[in-house]
Amino acid sequence: MQAEQIHTQVEQTQTKHAGVKLTGLLALVLIGAAVAAYVVWSGIHSRVEADNALKTETDKLAVATVSVVAPKVLPGAEEISLPGNMQAFIDTPVWARASGYLKTWYVDIGGHVKKGQLLAEIETPEVDQQLLQARAQLQTAEANLKLSEVTAERYTDLFKTDSVAKQDVDNAVQGEAARKADVASAQANVYRLEQLVSYEKVEAPFSGILTTRNIDQGGLVNQGANTPGKELFHVASIDTLRIYVSVPEMYSQAAKPGVQEYLTLSEFPGRKFFGKVVRNANAIDQSSRTLNVEVDVANPTGELLPGSYVAVHLKLPSNIPAVTVPSNALLFRSEGLRAVRVTDGKAELVPVIMGRDFGDTVELVTGIKPGDKVVVNPSDSITDGQKVEIAQE
Image (cartoon, rainbow, N blue to C red; front, side, top):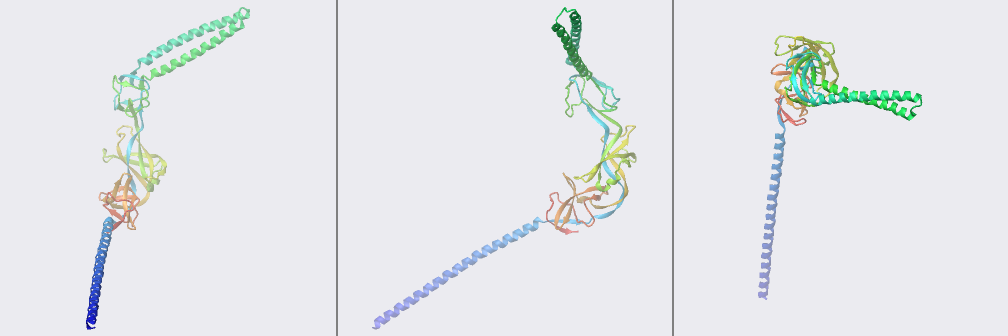
């Protein structure tokens, strides 16, 4: 009996010890799982924090830092100086209207010519022979016409005495009419070839100077070869020169027809050449916000040369205020001159028109207003709408 009690106590003790071991092992497993979960969570949290920090740093670096200035208000000018290119009043190429070889030329570049003056002669042997043939055909047609006229008249007289039939008279009369048509056709052909032969002589279309000669003696000349660089000569009329100027919109009222102005050229320091506005486009160009104006200037001595760069000085009807910005605040883009303005933390590329140049600063007559924040020394890669941060003002 005692042995059974002892055996029972032993079994209970073993079972208790086994339960304690199982509980401890389960606790260790749970602790290990918790540690592993914490390690995984910590790694994920650290990576998320690192990604967020990297994104924040990247976004911060993506925002360009710029320096800005406020435009200074400039008192209005009494006149404005605008660039322009001087052109001949009439400038035209002289093409060949006959094919052949250049026999000789009489005037070289820089030579003064009168309207109708002979510039060159072209040899066209094929056209000359065609003209001789056409004249011979005309003589043949005229001889046939005379014979038809005599025949028709004779048959008409014979018909009065009933010596010939009516059909023979009609044939003779209609034959005469056909020969008249042949003569008219031959005459037209002769006139056409005579006109072509007249093109052998190249004449000046108007009075002026010869600015280009693209052919030399013996050179092959092709009729109608009107591609650039293939013209025989270039003639320009320079007694009066014209200049086309793009006047900013705010100065457009100063460019009315009849307004007197003066020109200055670098090759004539200290001299003024007076002209006047003869016409304008009467419409503002939407892309440049300028008015196209033509200015004419007399050139009786020929000292002003077509193609020269000139400064056109226009008197203003009243003082028009403008603003100045540093010279390095301008961007030269393919679409035109631009200034960068900061609005609500974003860059805005504004089309501007430059007035007077003061060296370190320039006058802007359109685009920028007092109170704007203009970026100084903007990057060439800056784009419209790009986020920016102002470093100093």
